[in-house]
Structures are given as C-alpha cells and as structure tokens.
Image 1 (cartoon, rainbow, N blue to C red):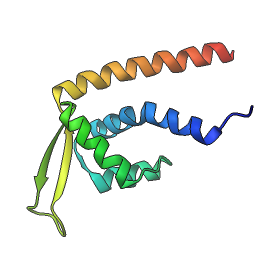
Image 2 (image 1 turned 90 degrees about the vertical axis):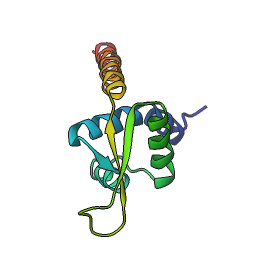
Image 3 (image 1 turned 90 degrees about the horizontal axis):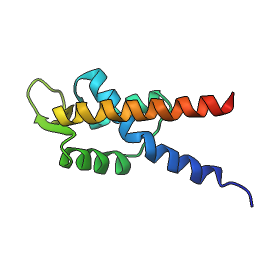
Length: 111
C-alpha cells in the first residue's frame, strides 16, 4: 500500500495551522483576514477563505484571539482585526514549546 501524500500533507497542515496563525498575528500585533491569507500565501501556505474564517472564529470563541471591526481611516470595506489575548499568548508559548520538542525529536531520529 502506497502512502497518500496529499492526505498526509492535509493532516500535517491541520496540526500546525493554528500555530502559524498565532505566530503571524503575534508578529504583526493585529491582522485582518485577507491580510492573513496574503501573508500566508507569500510564505507558501495557501489557505482558502472557507478554511481561515471558521478557524479564526473558533479561535476567537476559544478566547485565543480578540476581534474588532474597524471602519475609520480605511479605504474600502470595514475590516475585522484579530489580536492575541492573554490566553492566546499563553497558549502560543505552550504550542511553540511542544512544536520545538517535536521537531527536535524528528531531528534526533534522522541523525
């Protein structure tokens, strides 16, 4: 039986997508959805809106992100900006630690 590489990629992507989103938002302080999609695409992590927005909504509901609508000083449509909450910062730190442990383990096994 041959490995379904596409399926494996999907599963791996699900596992680190939240980490990538939180890291990106922490780096930029706050971001709106289209900005997140464009930044991730520039990093070769392409997402569809139908994947991103439910994830942002869930992460907001879980208390990891806060969201605010802004209309002032913006050209075009109102934008919903996302920022890390205190719980989001704490969760991100834990996720980073775990991810580093996992990648370190893979590196050790490969040697």
